Image (cartoon, rainbow, N blue to C red; front, side, top):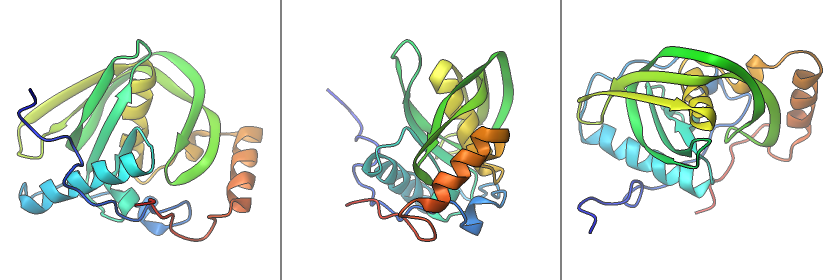
Length: 186
């Protein structure tokens, strides 16, 4: 029997910020208060991620400029990784550089082959301030790197070059959501 609730079950989905929103382009601040407000933010982020059918979500994607992300992501062996990190820092990204399909809840419906390392290690804290180290391989390593990029004010589109970048940006400019917030559907 489960002794704790399902992440996001007490949260409320928040509107997602989309490509072009200044909140996505600025580096996030460190969390200094590990309080009930932070716990509510994490719950809301899980609820938002699930409502949008994503595998990861950074706080600035819901307009909060703090270094926090949540994830519920499989690795290449289909093992589920579920959790959150506060004040995360990417401390290792190595192994094989793989160009794989990548998308983003802030750029809905658009994917592009994006280069990422096949192994990543991120250090941070839990919502209660306990130190945590999370490592991943394959798709989960991609997710960890993607979310860390968000907290630095970056998108996966920034890692694209040439024709891939032009195609993705063109598709984004023509998307029905271009220029407005995306509802989460709940």
